[in-house]
Structure formats: structure tokens, C-alpha cells
Length: 254
Image 1: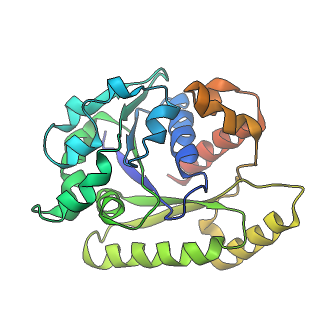
Image 2: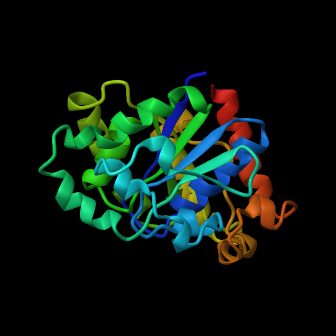
């Protein structure tokens, strides 16, 4: 077994990035995959969304990339069978500065995750909403990138910047990096704008855009406050069904 490493990235905040990382990881685990989610966002929302409180985050992704602990020590189990987690805290925000003076600064995460390749089918990395050194570390670790894209007016503008960053990382740091796919999030069927953005994105990126779209769904918004992925919180809601379909589509891609 050798893990496929997928970075979930978008430099814009509030686009459903962490929600996608948490719930896609959960859905893949529900399909029988061994999954590790790496919370690599200083806000630590993925850790909170999986019910891991701050006291349980002593060994975290900050300590991992600064070399204070090894990857196997940083893994915590979650309540979701088959899903493990490396947590994050606000300390990680200091890593942007600290990493800049270290050897192999772009590969700190990659070097640590290489020791876990044989232990999982999938490793997903929840990136911070920026294009700084943390995101570059995630992209240097990953085989592919999934981009959650909110169905709103400025979506394509942000996507152009991210695509440029992926191209830069491909050419100079990680030649194997590829775009796994773009997933449209917060899709509102009552809203003409969602349809227009979808048409626009599909026209630009064609088959790179997943057929599954993630609806705007109040149950998805509620789930993190209970420390649960949507598939645990409310299996039958539209959001759960969408993430299950997205996992199936990803596995079919493979």
C-alpha cells in the first residue's frame, strides 16, 4: 500500500475547503479506505470539526514541520472508523517565518509524510487559505490537488492565481503534482449565479470539474459545532449524499 497524497487548496477563505477536506476524508474512510487527514491550517478547523479539543493537540502539524516530533507520534484517532488525523493549533502560523531559515524548507511536510506512505490509502492535507510557505509545503508533499470552488462571482479570479501557483510548484519543486479536480461548493439551485459560475468553470476546465456539486446546506454548517463530519451528523441530508457521491467519483478516477 502506498498512499495517494491530495492537497485540498484554495487561497480564498470561506469556500468550503475545510468542510470538503473533513467530509471527503470521512466518505473515503466509509468506503473502506485507510485515510489520514493532515490539518495544516493554523485555524485548526478540521481538528475541531472532527471533535478533537485543544488539550489533545500537543503533538501537531507545527511540531511535525519544525522537527519537534515524528509523524507517527502526531497521529490521533478520530471517532470515524478508518480516519486518522494530525491536528493543528495557532502555533502553526509561526511556522511561515520559522521554516524560511530551515534546510529543505519547502519539503518539511513531505519528508515527514514519506514515513507514513505505507500506512494509508489516502492522505489529505487541509491547506491554509493563503499561497504562503505552508501551502507550498502541502503542494510539495502532494501527488494531486483538489480545489473547492464557491459558486460566486470572484471564483474564477482566485482560481487563476491558484493555478499559477500549482504551475510554479510543478516546474521547480514537484514535477509530479497534478490537478485532481475542481469541486463546486455552496451551490444554490435557487440562484441563477450558481448556474452561471458552473457553466463558466466547466467551459474553462472541462473534465477537471467534478460532476458532483456540493449544495448550500444548513446541516453542513451545523455539523462542525457538534465536532462531527456531516456523514456522521446527518447521513441522509443532501450534503452527506453529495460528499458520498464525490468520494465515489474520486475513487472511480483512480
